[in-house]
Image (cartoon, rainbow, N blue to C red; front, side, top):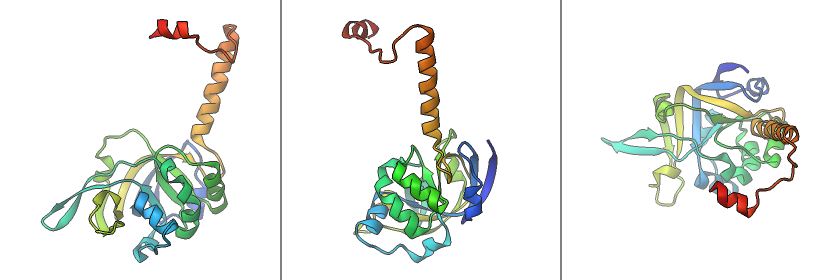
Length: 215
């Protein structure tokens, strides 16, 4: 497992050089996107703001902001579950030429195939104080509202300048490896070995009587 800092926008060699389990921090420019951003581009055929072409790193998040003396101040930036936007990701990876998706949880096999083809990775935030990512954000370069009234801040797309942004763990690399799947397989093997050691059938299930006693 390696620990490294990468500069966004990312090159294909940057992402192809990562392996599931690596720890990554980011410097440079990234942008955020949630439900309305994804729906607008994929379902409504909207054109992404031109300045998003400055980078190829998308953070799944509902940002929290506060307007102070006419300017927005970032209050919270906790990544949300990427699986909620999984259906949008194959076309968005192609359209936006994404090299990295930041979020939580995992993505489907269909999305992983596109990621492997184009050299894209998924990074999940690992344990750190809630304000760590806010502190690693140097500035908000631009704000693009995705709702009709242009006032739903938690659905806004932010273009951000960041430094030491992380830590994130590579849970899906560009070679088809999925860290969460590997963990599940390891747990399954361990459980089967424990069952065999203690003479328990693999299809063992608690009876209703045992369940009531356990509770």
